[in-house]
Amino acid sequence: MDRIAALRTVEEALSAFEAGEIDLDTMEARVQGTLRTYATDFEDGQLCAYRATGEPAVEGLVVVAETPAGAREQIAELVDTERPTIEVERAD
Image (tube, rainbow, N blue to C red; front, side):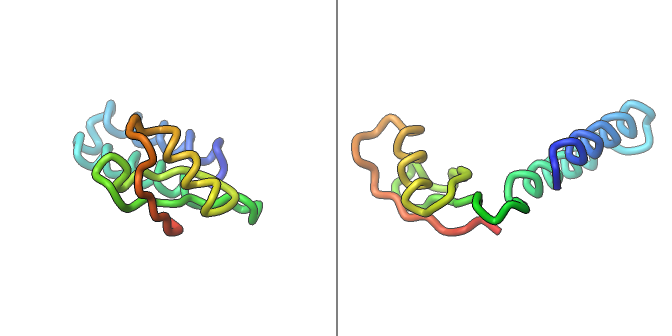
């Protein structure tokens, strides 16, 4: 999903909510689904979303990187702990 398609889908969900066609939970689900698809569906073959596991500070974080090593580096930079134990897996 490209950025424009993601923005259109989010706009459609917001419009439907404002028009009273859907409730807040439905709108949130649509927006969250769109964002997750956008964040994990890369067409260039170089970037990939990686989900971290390990210490509580990194558990569940998702970053975009070219390699698992790059993902671990990004995650380490995002958290304030020194030398966190980080494992990553593709977040397809």
